Image (cartoon, rainbow, N blue to C red; front, side, top):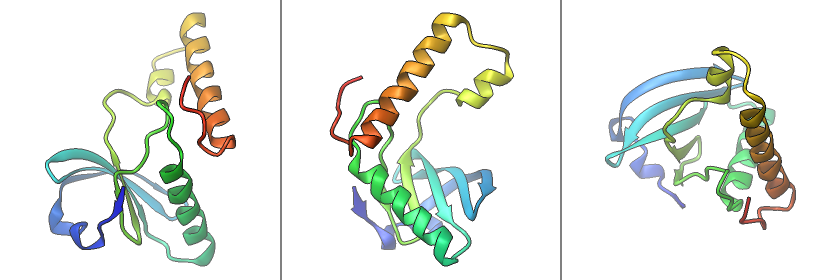
Length: 126
């Protein structure tokens, strides 16, 4: 992962689509360097929001786990993640409750990812 401030110009990011904006951060899908990406961009530059954003970027860069997506690039105000195909858990739950086996799989994955985060990213297996 690298700091590519100069390469993250608005012209370098095409097909941008805003997915959400809350707590001072805008989430978008886009295309960058020929690949689909997910962007998190800081839009409110107050000290608390910046501190949370920078902390998230630092943690995301440091963790190596198969269930956690790490950024591929960053600038001062933007984190660039590979876009993962599929639906969000929220989208899936909007379709109805999970079957017990599916719920167990999801819960196990979330717990493994949280354990890796709390271990400082040292876990590499699920």
